[in-house]
Amino acid sequence: MEGDEHHSASDLVDRYFHVSTMVHQVLVIQPFIRFGHAAKKDTNNQLMLEESIALVRTLNWKVVDHISIGLASYKKKVLFNIGKLTELEQRVATNHKITAVFVSRYQLTTQQRVQLENLFMVPVIDRYNLVLQIFFQHAKSRDAKLQVALAEIPYLKNRLMVEHEEERGKKHSGERQGEKYFDMQRFVLKKLEGGIKKKIDHLREQRLKLRSQRKQLEVATVAVIGYTNCGKTSLIKAITGSSTMQSKDQLFATLDVTCHGTRLPVSNMEVVFVDTVGFISDIPTPLIASFSSTLEDALHADILLHVVDYSNPDWVHQTAQVLATLKRLQVPTEAMDRMITVGNKIDKMPTDKWGQVKENGALPISATVGYGLDFLLGRIEDKLINVTDRLRVVLKVKAGGEEWEWLHKYTSVGRLNSGMRTTTTTW
Image (cartoon, rainbow, N blue to C red; front, side):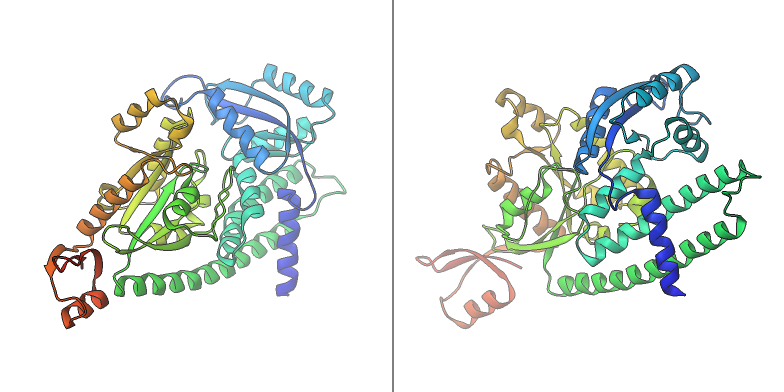
């Protein structure tokens, strides 16, 4: 029975996500609110469209057409007016390359999706669907795969509602699957969700033990967060010299929360840098919530390191989205107060714009060329010593003596001056 349930759920994934075989050629539709409180003031429709196109290309799909459409509201039963729908229908019908339509809205309602798919006669994909498919491709570890599977459940439930709604309009059709079919699918998804949550809870307990061990060993932790593709992985690799990390110039290249240890250059303090999944705008709460078990590693770190890609023209909006997501994840105020913000990729900016980074309270750096990393490590060191209640002291001890051995065993010994027999120690 359990095998049948997993097979049934797998069928739903294949039907609704098209992840198995399809490499789509896509019409990208970028809706945006023209005016009012729902309009985005810190970005524009062109930048939104460019990000939507980048999302599609991350799946190695091809964008064959694109359009931005201004709306008064997203909350209408019919997303677009009759005139615009007619134009879009003709666009899809006359361009035989189009095999799917991506409406870059975080999640279409049941009625919106039914209307658009009936009109276009090709799959209509929203932002939730697309990001999940990227997650599906990039998930490598058991943790990431489980969390992607959990994130799929709300979407599958929504699509099942769409199919159920369509069937109600076919009361006398021989193609109807019946209420029993939909009841069974809902049962399968509910049971599958419960099983996935139990496995994730087990992983959460394992992560809690690892965090407790680090705390007992008094290992300081720095969680590196930021908008997707801002350069988090490149920065950690530049700081730690980790040979296992591979940075990629693509959205959501990192899905697993991974830990990378190093020692700070001055104090010799042991530090673990935590790499995290990137944030993005217009992502539903269930999608973020599904990654909460691994994000907890970041949220319990001693300090947060917020990486902002200042070379991106949309950096203001991206910064706002990261801060909004942290708020949705209920990150404590004291953790936000301990956050260090860096302006990355300044090597891609004109030098006369570097002052803009400092004016906004960020440290200008470049993870790829190494600019500003020494200053950043000094700032991290000072902050960690402060928030972890460590002390930095200068002691005069006999080299090789009992005190010397004790300091090397129980503290972080930094600078040594053998002439004066002094040592700078942190504990």
